[in-house]
Image (cartoon, rainbow, N blue to C red):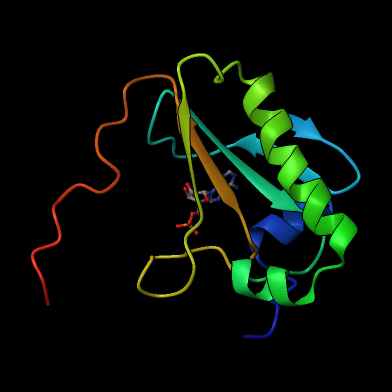
Length: 124
Ligand code: AMP
């Protein structure tokens, strides 16, 4: 899938649309999700044109990959989520309901989050 430079996170990175910033460095930007699904719901995005984790891990330079991972940790620390815990996840593609085609990691926390998925997998 080709990168769409008009996706909403590309616009946030270019400063064309505002965001509620939590953390930023040379490799990544973290900001509050506009439609939070937990008391703390923050998105971390790499500074580069990557559609998904697959695209990122295949094509990003090593320093960006390392920097992005470090930024996720820094953001969780910034949000003071370390003590009680948190969940990170990334949706990729249609089956996972990825809405925005720029790689983003969700950081969720601020309350007990329950099991990872709502329902137990019952097969087929
Ligand atoms: P996903 O379904 O994994 O692609 O998640 C996309 C996330 O981006 C959703 O949780 C949205 O609420 C969030 N989102 C969409 N537009 C914005 C925005 N302008 N600022 C912050 N979060 C956004």
